[in-house]
Each structure stands twice: as C-alpha cells, then as structure tokens.
Amino acid sequence: MLKRISYMLTASILVLGCITLIPKAAHASLNATCQFKQQRMPCSVVNRNGWWTIAWQDGVTEKYKELSGGRLQDKRGGIWTIYSRQKHTYLQHSNGNIIDIFY
Image (cartoon, rainbow, N blue to C red; front, side, top):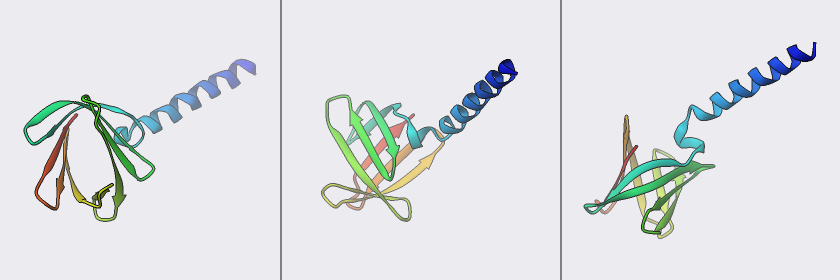
C-alpha cells in the first residue's frame, strides 16, 4: 500500500511538473537573444502574472504590463504590439521601434 501511494505521489508530481512546463513563456525565465536597433545580445524573458520582464545582458531590465489585444505597456506609457511565430517574437512600439526576441 505504501509503495502504491509513493508511486501515485511521484506520478502526480511528474504530471503537474509537465503541466507547468508546457507554456514555457508563462512561468519560466528563457534563455534568449534580444535585439533593439541593430544591437543584439543575450537576454532573459519572463512572462508572469500579467507582466513581461526583459533583462538584457548589459544590465538593462524593462517591465511591461499586458493589455488586451496582444499589447504591452511600458513604464513610460508606450504601447507595444506582440507578434509571434515559432521561435521568434517581436514587440513593435507605436513609434515603429522593434524589440526582437529569438528563443
């Protein structure tokens, strides 16, 4: 009986672990490469609880609040639209600036 409970507990942990890992952008820090104005460098992207955080290797960290319609708002009030395809996401600011994120 104890062996069966142990097996069920282990199986439950594995299943729950898989469920939380599937949406990789939702709860995990990603090793990525980001680019802004032709400057490319390693970065970390976290999307959690309605906020995106991009931490650039040079020490700059930016936070963005999720809005409706696939948009983000930065701390200066700028609006960024999210575009994504396979291993590439890019954020386009209303002024035309683009942040590329390569996973």
